Image (cartoon, rainbow, N blue to C red):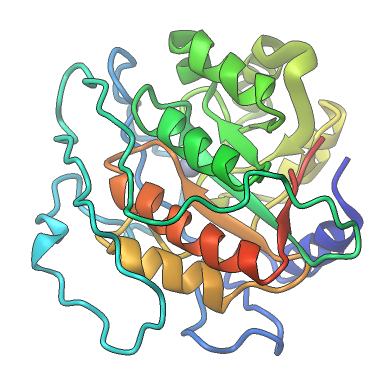
Length: 303
Ligand SMILES: [Zn+2]
């Protein structure tokens, strides 16, 4: 079940089609985000999915597979957030076998470990796409646990199959799982058979652990998508805003976006898989520290 506030916003997004989604007037600090999503880079040993000719997905917003390092990115001079002290561990995106790396430990004071349980507090819905990833998903879970935050992870079925332990940890720590197709296929233009294969196979693997939410990769949909999803018992959900962490954004920029767009009921798109997410891990830590101090709580979008 989707939380009511988020569901209301999702309706707005869906009414707007799969084009641009804009935040409401309550959040207007940063440029309007686009729901275009990251290119998908499955972690080893999952083979790279082949491009589908049936999709009409624009590619212009996508980051190249190999991007320059972020270390040369200038620091924002307008931020009010603390800077991460510990540099992010770097993992080559083409690395055949992800090497477990220690969770970055920003030099922050530990927040109050007690989860925020004030039901009247504003709630944000953090969502993570393209995992599970053997390196970054555990790091993301560590950060979330530090702040008593719970989220929804839109997982890729083939990666769930490859990383069952990481998937189970997501569930065990109180987060929920959403369907992000079997191999990150764009849903727009699929035949019914193809749709049933990629969505149904993923949902079957998730079983009782799966929520009733389907997030189409790239927000790619056509006139059949929502109806076919409903026949699988699934509701299509997108998102309100994203720091576009599939691009080469710094941890500071990730954090700044999350904080700038924070409001009650907002659905935030982040990524724990599909590439090097070390900056997202650090940025999330910075943002959650700030927003926790402002009284926000973080609940799963889907149950
Ligand atoms: Zn995705």
